[in-house]
Every structure is written in C-alpha cells, then in structure tokens.
Length: 94
Image 1 (cartoon, rainbow, N blue to C red):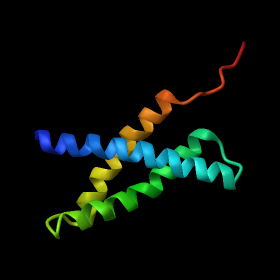
Image 2 (image 1 turned 45 degrees about the vertical axis):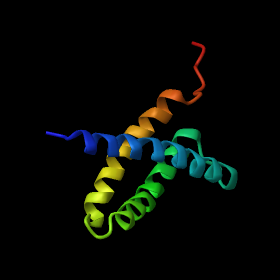
Image 3 (image 1 turned 30 degrees about the vertical axis):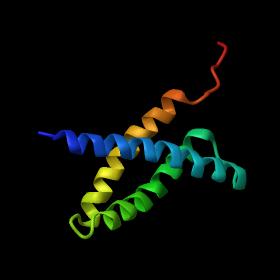
C-alpha cells in the first residue's frame, strides 16, 4: 500500500511537473511550430529527468535515480492530466 508520504511526494511532483512542463512547453512553442498539448508532453518529459536528478540530489544518496525518476514520471502523468484538463482546446462547431 502507498504511504501518505509517497502520495504527498507524487502530488508534489505532479504540481512541479505541471508548472515547469507548461513553462518548457511555452518555450518550445515560441521556438518551434508545435501544438499546445504536444508541447506540454515534451516539456513534462524533459522535466521528469531534471526533476529526478533534483530529487535524488536532495536525498543524500538514500534514493537511486531510477526510483526517483519513476516517482517523477508518475507525477508527470498526473501533471499532464492537470494541464490537459485545464488547457484551452478549440471546440469544433459541428
């Protein structure tokens, strides 16, 4: 079962991934011609590696990179769902 500490870390990772992934996605849209949701996905994918490195460096060697990356990736999926739910997508008028 998941402890409350793990759930809190995943929720924190989700917020971190949503905010920084949206920022990286915005930068990608300014540099390239990419859509909103793909830019969010790429931004979050990039930030899972950066977030995992930051998480592992903060743990003083108590956590290996793979388990840190898995937590950040789970948070990234939740963060992408948050961004997807709150994004302004065009609605077809059919």
